[in-house]
Length: 297
Image (spheres, rainbow, N blue to C red):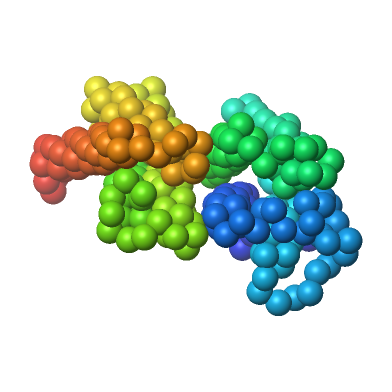
């Protein structure tokens, strides 16, 4: 007899863990943007010589809360991998979940180095460690997304359309918060908003590529294999451009006018390619519906 409630499916658990990771991303960005990453007297895992700091909104608390959220999320990620090995999942699902756990210690190590400037590792709060922290976190997030998609069963034209829709919406909304577009001040809150929406768009693109690959191999009703391959190519290109904007969203370069224009161009390419993928999928779906026999014909 299973102790797991009937409503707790793998897809729901993995999706919740992916959502926790997305929130962790935003918390990390907000923590760094407010300078709270340098709080806790540059100690890790203690915070200002305490296990739990004063529970008031201050830099110590923000950094500590970020660490606690990261710890809980880490255990949930381990749970995703464990579920894939205990259940009847295919090799790719197990591989994605296991790789996410395998690189988790690297993310923890880089995070510890980042916040120990003048502590365990002098100079740890640097551009290189910020870049590594961002790239590894994005890899874990992507792997969790793939495990959720692959472990949830076979795709469908509906899920395919939803994925491209999320991609377009996420990238478009992220542009509002982006430092490349002067709509809002690039404050700590705006930075967190940029990454929440941008990563939602990234996850939509990951799902679109996964579903397009499946459709190109086995075919979906109403979606031809050639259309699926085109959507896959466009979504992949959009993903590359979007990752570039995510990297430029942090202080990894001296953000001059040239970098701002490159950032804006990357955003434009990401939106255009994602929109093209959604349009081709919609057109393919309309064509499939229009050629479907009516009644008993």
